[in-house]
Image (tube, rainbow, N blue to C red; front, side, top):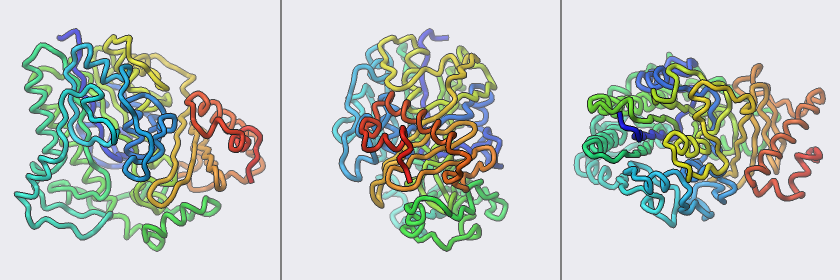
Length: 461
């Protein structure tokens, strides 16, 4: 076994935490992700720092909270600062120490710098795949918009499996060399619109799909922007009969990603490199997919979009079958984790903390909350910050009513309790905790009295 481990980081796009078999919530088929969980450590309370694609990926590179970078939304929307290369980022440190670093798939972390500037010696994007699809499927067209539809593209030609093939090629080439490697595979799925290929397009019967916990939300007593979100997407009159086929396709797309993951794992196993490779599965954030009657991920900080799958498998350090209850931030914590697991002292943890003690089975009781942020997107700017514990989800909406949900009593987060006078002390305590963590992360909205008076002094209607 090599002293210096290989690293395989698998990043899905918009994969909800509860849409894995390992989560034990719904009957969705993810045998390969479940196998990783059974052979490694499964984080039961992993959260994204921001449920938007580019900001989350910028945090994954840097370990720094998106708002502190200026990454307030997707960087192809309204221009914002983006992450810039730094020698302390884990990819740069790994490259300096001799790891062969490659990125396959999605890159939207920087408009000003390429993957090479962050230590990736190789990057394969989607241009080659797009050319192949244009040649093999010249009449390809889709008609159902964001709700998705079955894809006529053969499974082997789909994005998931084409990218799995490129990953296996890289692993075979690199395994013939002495140097360790770091491979990050960024899938574009199950991001909407979901267009699974067969057999996954017909794997799930819509009539057998159970509604999300968050489905059926009336939005009573909630911020105006959520009702407007439904109007903007033309969703306000849809019931479960309208949504269930969309959710079935989402399930199918998740299972298709899982199958592609299985192919990469099988490649590692065939080469005898499975146990000397740190394998991580995670995502940038979740997806509403009908939850709260909405699509996509904007203007809310509910578990649908903030709670994410995170699994680490490495027999040398991670106890098999471990279920970790502590609250962690996948994008902030993974850089520091890889720095510790590989013994590289020059990785700057940023705002993150290593997960190495947790995957070894040690408890860290102070990790009892998650803090998440968002700032709006395509329908206008709208700043929010949230703190999530076992008991409560409190959402600070700076320009509208705040939100408070009892997690045990209301797992779908549908009944806003912020007006309950009996919970005033609870709200005050959550606001203080949220403010303290925002200050630690150098959040720009935690530094002005014009806004922090809402958190520290309850100056909120």
